Length: 322
Image 1 (cartoon, rainbow, N blue to C red):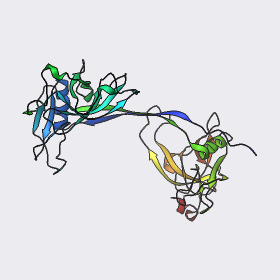
Image 2: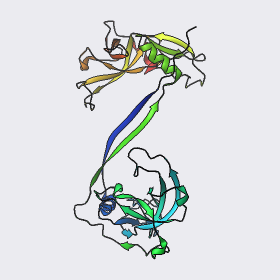
Image 3: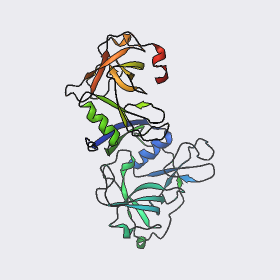
Image 4: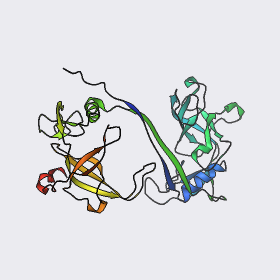
């Protein structure tokens, strides 16, 4: 009996720039940070929210009553971060803290530069350490640092003061890079599936209860909740069940638009998988089109599917797979 292949794993990164415009309240808040000014917004009930929001979380009323709060505050809760990750505020171990700035009724999440967890506590007085270069972003607050109360600060500062929110060259939009680094393991079932692809075979797994063949396999039937251990080779040909025409070129992709991306029910499979259709004008792709795989240059996976030269499949043969 051939032993199962070692389960695969690989590092993956999901990254994209998130671009958004800012309303008047968020614009004033971020522009204020650039000018070393922290703004909050007062609700109908008189609470001061920092960071500010544009609508009252209790009444949904529009909020525009901006106020300036202090650059000092009090830690309300915290957690120690012993291993900072890429893109975090500090490169040395630090504490994530919720800080209620003087004059605010809510807390702001940021980093606290402290020598160790023994130096952090709820109730600790802290102040903002401003970034040397500021552009109108939350990173204009480099971090918080402990504030020596012996220097004359023995408690919360004065009440918040009204502010117009007007600044020169206001920030009206931001680009926030989003990135997720993680190690992906496909599990035993998909490991077998990927190894079979290197042999130009497509292997799914059959549910022992409902008999549906899952491709790619998941290791268990999501309907019946039982393990799927019976391997079944499917395809290689299949039927287009549904499709869409892609007109926007993906970043770093060599495929020219327009092209067709389709759900393809491989012969013998109990559900359709995704695949690109080529070898036919995009406006001639249709439901029921019979297709076959064209393998990548290294032969490790189907690069795309092309017409198989067979008559179209009857709708009744694939309607349950839509």
